[in-house]
Length: 238
Image 1 (cartoon, rainbow, N blue to C red):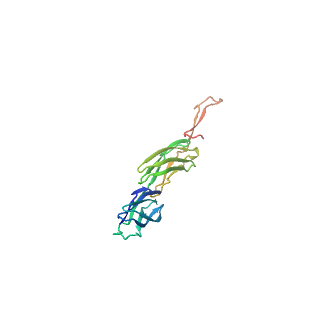
Image 2: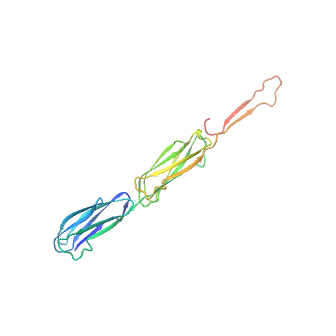
Image 3: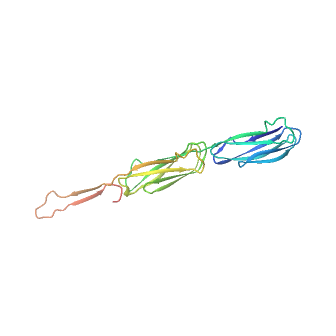
């Protein structure tokens, strides 16, 4: 009676290789030769082996796990001595991928004045079951400014909030600035539909005010003098 047992992790990070062992046991008092099969790197390997009475033989198995569960199968066949049963010659195990799902939210201020620098926030979350590696966020503004946010490794259920400085040029007077944040990870994800976030920020208009200060009356034949003042009611140089 040749018994095959397999020891594999029940889950692993999506995009990684799951490694385990398969053991073949000769539950008899005779030396037996037989053929074994097992996966190495996802490719089935076969070899003919000889195991002594009540002896065991162990091999390392490995499979790549993407974003769907992987079934790992190992078996024994072609015994040199007839077996009492072959029902326990083949065994399977399922490895389930732990898949991350990173999302991003961009929050710009409700409004801004031209010529100023304002603070925005970039929130990155991992709402999946796996750890996300090499997570990088990017903020692109309609003014041409681009900001990179390095998050690094993000565990399941983890959240990072990063503040970034956004410059509002004087030429943006009276317009609306649009910002788009994206996030990416080197680990396969459940979905990428939540990897982009957009927000808008209206920019106030310039307001130049002219005031004059003159005497209301003066002596006929004389020169009246006063002042005129021009005020830039904005935060930009005009």
